[in-house]
Amino acid sequence: MRIRTPLSGARPGCQGFEIEINGQLIFSKLETGGFPYEDDVMNAVQDAYDGKPLQKITKSRAPCVIM
Image (cartoon, rainbow, N blue to C red; front, side):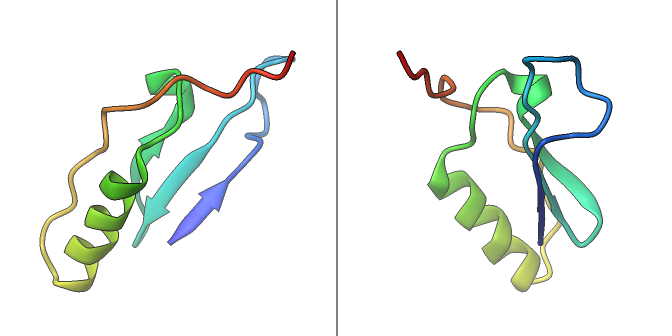
């Protein structure tokens, strides 16, 4: 599993966050606008371990805002 942040080439002020498992992109913050739910990530890791096909995570929660 690889987690990448920030993404090179991202526009200023826009932080990327991606998760790849076995070379397959399963989550992108730039696509969903937020961060993945932990249960969805753990389920994807378990599916990869079990040899099941990986599904892209499409649900996300709002990004953190620091005031």
